[in-house]
Figure 1 (cartoon, rainbow, N blue to C red):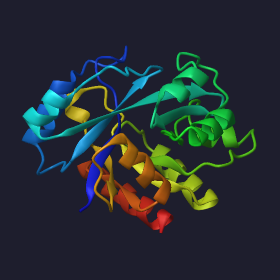
Figure 2 (figure 1 turned 135 degrees about the horizontal axis):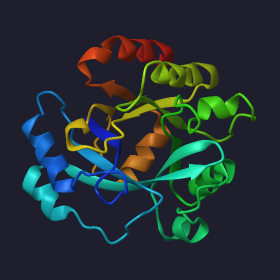
Figure 3 (figure 1 turned 180 degrees about the vertical axis):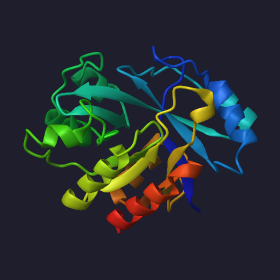
Length: 227
């Protein structure tokens, strides 16, 4: 049984988002024919709310809600999945100058996985950093499809996948309700928890999917690059 998740979204807990979680889930329920999501991952900027509980909303709307975080490093922005007490004790997510290599290595050692997001984006993406710095080691995957990407950004992300053999994921990077699920990741396995997600991200058995009507050509190009 496959699972399709939007791996990158921001609720109103992030300072630059206006989207309540309940509104996200209602939008997904009403538009499943257009964006067939099983769930979303909340990746709030520079924070992780370990006490958040979305079970009542999951039951109400039939959409899974998982939690992760988006942090800032010397190689750009990185999504951290599988956040636990050890990771929170080791890293201050509010620090905008985290060392990317240390983050990737230590998060993996402590049971999570770190995935650079929107790597083709100027200034905060991996692509530009690789032009001046050595490539990161122990990197499993990068976000190749991002719902907020401008022209050429996803294509640059696909170049990284082709050059370094990374696995590819997709996420909407939504900050507004109507943008949730524009890009997502389809996993071959069933995912029901954050532990399942971390395990499956490490297998590489998944693909980015694009539900943006005018971006089908880009999605096809990315698929060709990742084969």
